[in-house]
Image (cartoon, rainbow, N blue to C red):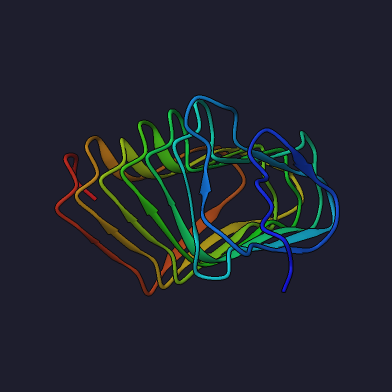
Length: 170
């Protein structure tokens, strides 16, 4: 069997499948380089002092899938200027700020994502010039300020999704 690896405070540069929960309490979260798929493999990343998972600035082709991100000191996921980001089958629960914040992103697809109990479920801001960002089949429930905030930039699409019980109108 593979040895357990704690990725908190580290940068991942190759496709990676987690083999244990990642409790980042008191430390920074996980950083993802371009051209990386992080498969949470059903595990949870939690407790980072900042974003639990964040991209390198201007990253390309970054994907996160199959697990839970919760209890982060800032965002669950922060993509900064990412082109072709993918987030599939992820739970974003009880993060201090956004479940997911994508600033300056192009061609983002978040599909089958459940965002609950965050400040905002999703914040898509200043979308990049290379195309739309899409939230598909997402569930956004009981976030403290807004379910989804889209602000500036290119068009964004929320499709076949369920937004209910967020503090501001959805």
